[in-house]
Each structure stands twice: as structure tokens, then as C-alpha cells.
Length: 418
Image 1 (tube, rainbow, N blue to C red):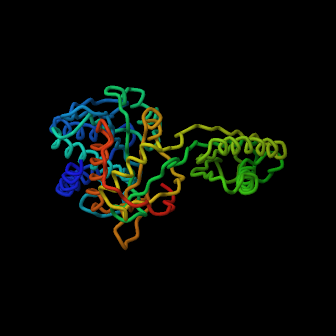
Image 2: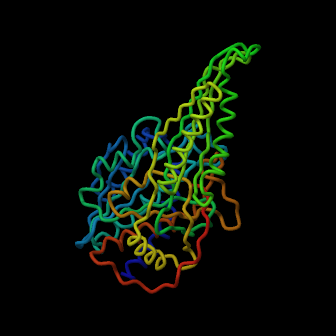
Image 3: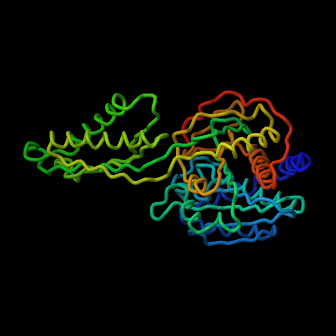
């Protein structure tokens, strides 16, 4: 097995030029959630050229590629998300987005290139491999405006069932980690998330006679103060939770009291009990405030993603592989991130392992995800490919291989938000 891993490491470095070219191709042609037609067609064409069995049009524009090894073994899967964000890129690079107002600002172009690289590399070693390799190219991870998330749709379509996948892995780029460094967690990795919609309904009146109406803008200000006070003083401060609002809308004219104000935001949590405590407590707060002001306050909760939890046994195996491939200095544990995504739908059906890959130029200052100036260092691509291909090759073996012993993983670091 060590000989195979050495071959994977060498070939991953040899594919750097192709990895960069694929990444830039996807970056120049970004597509929003459930619009990834060109991306899916491009992915499928590459996979067919390398001899994989390919299925397209899954849960929209999702693509499935299956590679069969030369020996019996387990079926393992790698997932990459394909969609971009409605963000206008502000970087003037030769490979900048050619689609106005759309940008790969979350690193999905990196995820695509790494997954393609793993399919390409492993196909060149097919006769030496065990088991089956299932490459899942997923649409609509970024919270689609309509329909299910891509992960939920692809799981429902049976992408983990034939062959029956026994382990599924994925990574996400991390702009606050140096190139090639990896962070992981053995349990909860990312928060669960709900969309929170608050509707404050008052009574419209002329701006000169507010006493004849109920001002929902004024009540909304009180609502926001109540929320922050409640979270700070009524919920155990040792319990991670984040409730923020990104959109507020209401009113028609400067001298007319609005009749309704809507706030749109998200709640993130690391414990289901904390989620319920927050939602129940807010409903009680709003009931009292509604009685005091005369406004109607409606709380609507739309569950987005469950908490992302790594399988402990699979994590132990994955860490042994990553230590062997990349060395002890590149791995550290992390505190759970308060961001969220839809990989948990895969991890609920098969043991899952999800980790973060550093893409910050050493000594540099990385730009945040979802930023119009997000510019990850492409030198991270071969490290991501080495990790992906090596994990899949080892996990597909009928028995977990004996690997070189490694020392303990260093202490935890806080990855921040994703």
C-alpha cells in the first residue's frame, strides 16, 4: 500500500498544470444553483474520456462517475459541489469570471478540479486498485432559490446505492489556513442551519399622525434588541449559537408608516437542544412584545441543513492516511465551524469524513469566502488531490491497510466561519 500511496503523491504533483487549467476553466464559466448545465457537461466529458461509467442529469445537472478497480474491495465516494454565487467579481485576472454578476467565490472551482484530478489519477492506476470509486458532482449546494439542495436530491436519486457506498468524503477550501494544511474534527464539524423569517405587521398611517397606526419599523427595532438580549442572557453562553439577519424590507414612502416589515436571516447551532431552546424562547419573547405594541410578530422557520458530523471510526482511518500522505505538521484538529452546508445528507446514509484544505499563500492574508476578491492559492490543488486520491485508494481496500505509525495530531485550532 505504501508503494501505491507514493505513486499517488508523485502523480498528483505531475497533474498540477491540468489542475490549474481545470480550475480556471470552471472559474471563467460559473453557473448558479440548479443552472450548472455547462459545468455538468464539461465534467461528464472528462470522465468519459478517462473510462468511467457516467450518469448525467441527476437532481438537475448532477453528474455521477464510477470507476471499477482491478481487485475486489469496498465502494467509496468523493463529493464535489459545482455551483457558484451571485457575486460580481472584483479581481482583474486573466481567468476572471466571464459571467456578469456570477462568481466562484466559495472555492467550488477548486473542489471540481480536485475531484476531476482524483478521477483522472485513479483511472491511471485502475489495475492496482481495489473496489469501486464513486465520484459525485453535485449541483445546488449554495442554498437554491427553489427546490431541494443538490445533496438531498442526489441522495434521493440513489447515488450511494449502486454500488452501495461504505464511506463518503469531501473537502472545503479554507482561506485562513496556509496552502496544503488540513484541519478536521472527529465529531461535529459544521453547524446546523435554519432560515429565519420574521414578519412584523403593524397598521399604516400618515407620518404626521403615528398615534393612529402601529409602526412596524419601530417594533422591528425592539425585536432586534429583544433577540440580542435573549441570546446573551437567557441562553447558556457556553452553548454556541448564531442568529443574524441579512435582509430587511418594508415600507412604501418616506411619510407613510409601513404596514409590514420582513427580516430574513439564519440561525446556526451545534446542538439540537440549543436550537429548540432558542426558537421556543423567541416565540415567548415575541408574544409579549406583540401584546405590548399591538403589532403582530410572526416567526417562520425553514430548516436548511442538519449539523455536519464526521463518523468517528472513519475519521480515525482517514487521519492515519492523511498523516502518511502529508505528514504530521500539516494536520491539526479544529473547533466546529458555525458555517453550514448540505454534505450531511450524504453522511446520514453512509459514514462520512469532511475536512478543510488551506488555500492561503504562506505569509499572505487570505480573503474571506463569499468575497468578490476571493482568490485562493492554486498551489493548494496538488495537496487536495493527494488527499482525495489517497483517501479513496486506502478506504476502498477490503481490509484497512497497515500504514506507517505517526505521532499525535497537534492541539485544536479555531477555523472560524465558513
